[in-house]
Length: 279
Image (tube, rainbow, N blue to C red; front, side, top):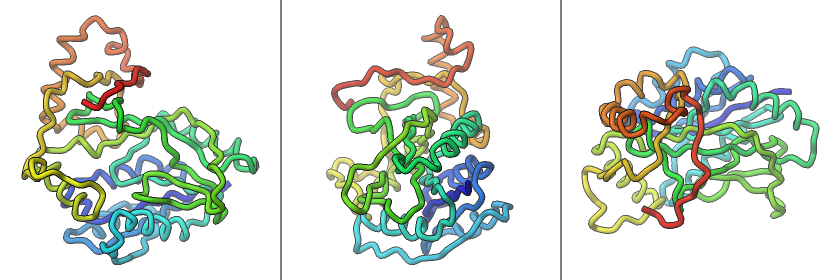
């Protein structure tokens, strides 16, 4: 069995995407890693070159912003087309995998590689928000998604590249890995989040109201979101420890939930209770 990792990157330094950590998190179980590097206003290409691994294979492309949000799936499919593995493991530049899940993920790929009834492998999601110790589980934040697809030319990225579909229109046949994807796209300084939101609108990913077009993004009261007691991927240690808002929020959590055994044992867990209305 051969496994290809793949991703697309553009302006990752400007917008503070943890893409180096993302790639390195699954590199141990990949035989190759395809990185589609778009034309950038920063040294994104240099950052990818700094990953010292012979598994890294870089392709370069210019993004056509006239495609709107479809540019993301278009560029993702270019990276997928360059993959040579039996499985293609896709991570976006703000998604990271915990090292404790790697054996489980690899075993799932091995068990399913010869099963024609499995098109994709599905993950559980942890959408961290504002702090590395708070996550979203309310409406509008998907809790499961596919990130490993069979590389047989029959599966493609679609829309804004958050998911995949079969080219013949049939439903994607999935198997759960029960592993987590750690999504860090919303754990950023307020000024960086403000820039990201404006960039997302330029691409066509979101439509912002005039009141939302601010230089800084306001996260609000983080206590309204569930606390996360577990560990983070090892590659994210420096980012977690240096994040000021997270340090302050962790103190709040320790005071409020001192009695919770999950806190003491650092269990990687998220509540199954969904919030019906978006906060």
